[in-house]
Length: 187
Image (cartoon, rainbow, N blue to C red; front, side, top):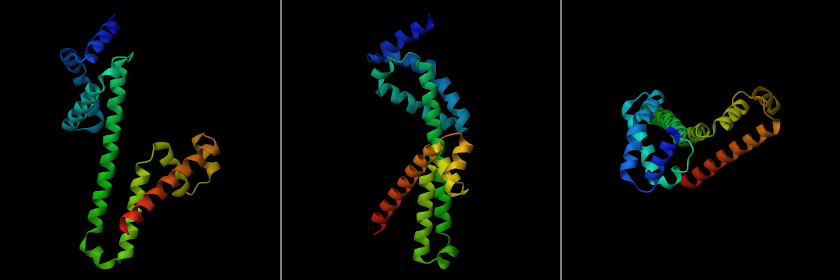
């Protein structure tokens, strides 16, 4: 019974019914915000991300009224927004600390231009690896950092050796593309 009421409410909101969307927003916003706050540990960030989710829903409302379970979809969106936010904060933090390190006076005196470029390229590769999908990043790190063979990685992750090879090829392709673009940018 409640599922049908929710669907008809969603259907009304998809037809540009502001009142219906407001009801939907009032019903789910606190739950979504609480859920996101669990991950990001900041009420202000949780509120911003929750508002982004509802803005996305409003802008794409014609898609959302067809969903069988809007509640589950909302919480999947909240989880994905939280993960994306946390990943971007990690990248920002790493870049900021590297930037501070690269601009310290002692370092500038010691490093040549080539060494600075090499350090910047190393950071760029590190950031590229951090932005890879979880499985690809894990396989790449096991191969390149832990020096495991493809068969060992496949065994540890319980996947085929071919899957490991595909992930490594994609990771290397992604890194080569970033390096190629950095050469274009710096030349």
